[in-house]
Length: 409
Image 1 (cartoon, rainbow, N blue to C red):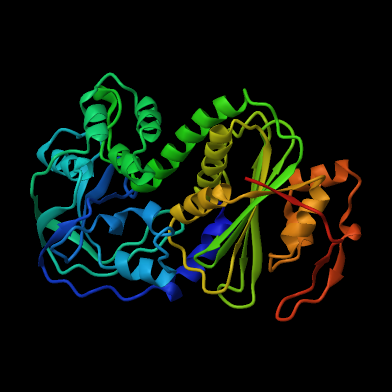
Image 2: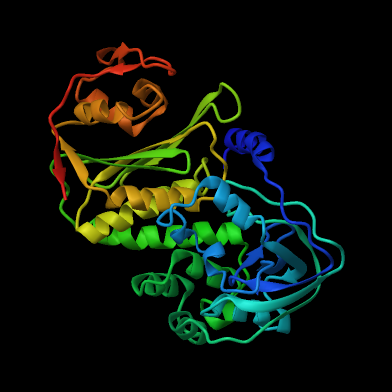
């Protein structure tokens, strides 16, 4: 992640933190099932379970795919997640078959929540909030951890016992069988996937991006065989104080991600952007894991619909926004791609329509863009062609001509 964006996210994270439930040195509860593998001090990292102080099924607490369909607010998500207590101990990532590693693998592969007992070396404190991973509550070094036995989820179990199946092949196979992304990512993180001798613990933050990248590359191979769309299409969706506009343009796959953070901390309006052409991207994106979560979600939809297109994605994180992890991007963009598309004759008309629902003038995105600006220049459209009109409570927005659109279902 670029230093500028990382520093900005740190500045908005601490004020947004809620208060987690007090926890003593011992705890009885349930794990959703959930674990967290840290990245500090790699290859010897902190690893351990996340346990909730409840005695009932609590799988939804670690299933982010369910939160937007369930209508959860940011505050409800944060409140739920801060109840998850993290136990941790140093563990060498290559040790995937010792008792502690096997216990974590059993947790992750379980088909249901597991009754658990945890003892800590000290009372858990603090909480963790990030744009990269889902928040959780207090943490402390583990003294001991016990979880009941349970049946494994059948698809995860099959891949776990297949020591000849590569991690990439397992990720694609599990996704094709409807296993939620969050379950696949956790299985990868505890060394439950991959060729036997190559299995390793993978820090949670890294395993999330790895799964997004593997699936994006898989979908892209299919998308490149599809015929390009013949008009500009727009999909939009809003939730969790975010608005997303996915603009699909005719031609081969290329991709630009632009995200604006608007008055989250004060009166700031900051934009971060990155892009790739048809040949893809070699270096890690300067804007972090959200780049790959969005890319995967768009390509997943294009592959499902049998289409090829370039994608320009605009995100606005608005006042009240709280960093909740890249699931926020992945699931919002997935929902955007499920909305009926609006079709336009050209990119300028599509931007005219999108601008009606954006808080930031579209010209600000264009000024920070690479692919979007190039496509507009290719059609002899300039920023000067975007007039301005006033909107109450916001800075002036582009005054763009009315357009005729039709819905594609």
